[in-house]
Image (cartoon, rainbow, N blue to C red; front, side, top):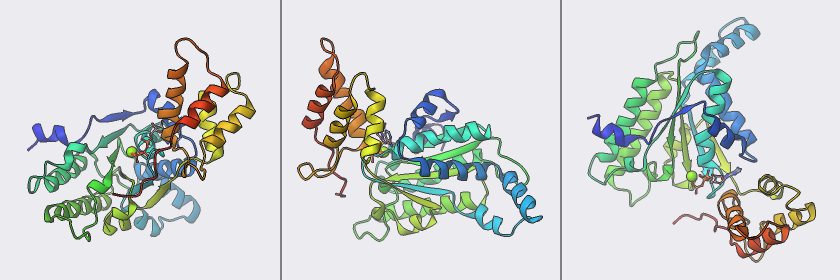
Amino acid sequence: MHDDSTDRIFDEIVEYPDPEIKRRYNRLVGLEVMKARLVKEAMMRLQPSSLEDWSQRHFKESLPALAYFQRRPPLFVLAGDVGTGKTELAETFGDEVARKTRIPILLHSLSLTARGTGAVGEMTRLISAAFGILKSQAEPVANDTRANAGHILLIDEADALAQSRESAQMHHEDRAGVNALIRGIDDLAEGRRPVLIVMCTNRLSALDPAVVRRAAATFEFTRPNAEQRRMVLRYAFPEHICSESEMTRIVELTGESSKLGVGFSFSDLTQRLIPSVILAAYPDHGISGDLIGTIASQTKPTPAFTGE
Ligand SMILES: Nc1ncnc2c1ncn2[C@@H]1O[C@H](COP(=O)(O)OP(=O)(O)OP(=O)(O)O)[C@@H](O)[C@H]1O
Ligand SMILES: [Mg+2]
């Protein structure tokens, strides 16, 4: 099939390490637990020999339990509200893995157009082709060695692909697509290939239970608490621009309230509030705590994601 269709399966492939991506990864606030887990899992997957060494060191044998670990589907589900860092984390943690292991990592994002044009058989064919390409690139890694390269398969907005087969309205063709996805995940797991699959979704409940069951971990992303909002805002507006007491007021203004309901999401801060402040000040004025507070009180947080 290739040439033409291969082009459409993945967005542009990203290679880590990359200094710009490191900067984005470091700027993520409040995701320490998820960062540590993803990086550790990837490291263990890429360097089976280090797991083997650990087993030998502590138990003087290769623990039978290791086989269960290695054959588990390397699938991670990042779920939660809009603008909370799911895509940003999925697109950047590979950089940290590449730096820690000194193994180059490639990110393959299943492109939106891979969702198909609706033609019968299209989605199934594209999913199978995506897994086929990964399989051909990611050679199995034996117990006593390390991978030459690692791969991350990112399936963003995964509910569009992995919708529950239980859902009554689901078209027969979509069911076949989910089945292809499950087969692809199992196949990569069995093959001990240096691949991590990351799925992002706003609606965990819409994902097929068979897909969710396969996940090694499911992470729940939420809007920032007061301390996290302060970190993001402080990074943008240091103390010489906005005093501590003004900042406290802005942190409150951007939080949950009976008037607004939910508080600001991370993206409400980084993609709306902060740029709006700059727009309001440029080119004739400076930025003050007052200005930030005024803009914050005029900005409405994105409503919580509630499904359709
Ligand atoms: N934890 C965070 N710390 C700092 N900034 C964040 C964080 N999460 C999100 N942002 C900011 O919000 C922007 C959007 O985040 P991202 O695209 O990851 O959201 P998302 O969770 O994928 O949302 P959606 O469900 O709408 O796709 C990021 O580019 C970043 O600027
Ligand atoms: Mg996203």
